[in-house]
Length: 354
Image (cartoon, rainbow, N blue to C red; front, side):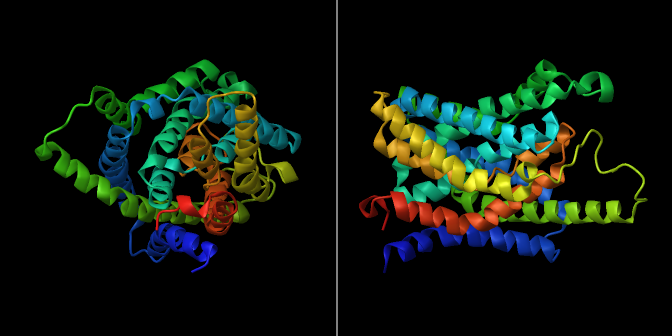
């Protein structure tokens, strides 16, 4: 078996499960009304148990590694800036530019990244991947939300200002079980507590279900977003051409190249991993204590498709959620090829789990 075939044999099942969910929802085998129930199972039960297990089994020094955290955070900031500048030059407002930038900088490390990288590189990949997820959920998303408020929409549309929007996002984060699961796992790792088997057995069962159900659910979510965006586009087509778009208040549309779906997808799948690779090696050259294996994981996380929760944030804050959902859909479809090729280019064969 060639190296590329070996890598594809690992990545294909993950993307195939996403495709299964997409086709099942398109065919209405999974009713659209039932997708929130799948999401609740994944977000509140299965994924928290998986992240808790990985965090608890990861040495605390890896979870608190400053080199990994600072390097990835710096790359996220640069990626946000690059995508923001591109979208602003294309004529998009701050709100839509910010969520386009967020979808370019926020990989799908929760639903797809952690289980895929562990399957490919072993359990040691969990620590750096969990660090990236924590950075993106708490800092990258909050920064993008603050930038989205620079249109001064509060007085015009009743939307919150930057500080209020970030506070709202952080309150939402406080009710999100994923950060708490990672934190509790880190505490178990730091203290060395051994939980009894009667507690760990259901956690292990739910954690084992996380990867397949999360990927299937991701496909369902993408299909729902696609169907809803099609319906919205049809409604706009049938509307009076002289009337303003009614899809969402405060949405500024642009046909400029920098704001297009294709450009943002290229930012996510190509520019983001290239940036992390370059900045990571630059940081190591400057003496930043960044482990080579951790850097490898950071690059592969950056090469993942866009996170599926960004369209939800965009809709909540009045941006064009249909455009963001299409970026997530296209990036997920193309990532099977791009991610596989990046793995083949930068991962030493002896690191791959056989």
